[in-house]
Length: 219
Image (cartoon, rainbow, N blue to C red; front, top):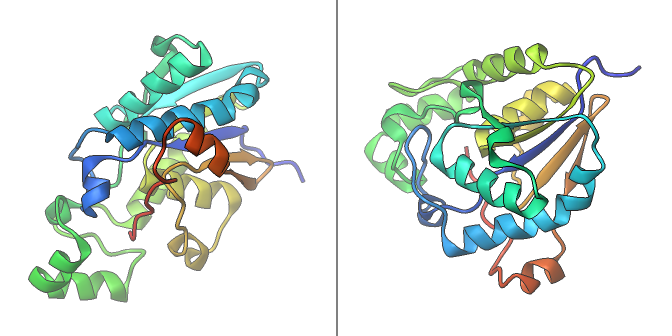
């Protein structure tokens, strides 16, 4: 059965300073690293032919600076005007509240009760000032349902945002969603209720001077 959802090309922002440090960013922001800039260039080159073949396209971007910086590089790489990327508040990263700026070891050591509560109910738990995964999934599901069905949509956002979007689109189980561990350079083609991960070849990464495909995140 054909999915009622439009086709999407979902792209994660490039590596940031806090990605390197292993710190949760959420609604805070740090800029892309030099390696992150090269990652985005490699992703842009990898996807250029596909983007040019999409036809009727809508471009969306999280309004957070790290995503907009990524979209700017992609727009130049694809020859697409940057102002075609529409800032969409629903695409902002999950809010991590008190956890933002902290690493996993720091959360385990300094906020052990909160860490245990999250481990006990990773779907419904919301850290103080933050969002639960369920809240995030509901936000992304509502946005997906609002999209124009006959167009193809290119989305530049964040790991947490894209995991929620991918999970809802494909009907993934909670266990599957919790196991998502995509690299920084991964993009996903979502079509007919299924997803295909579009990886960048190591040779292309080397060609642009990229050190690695980037880090995944643990939450």
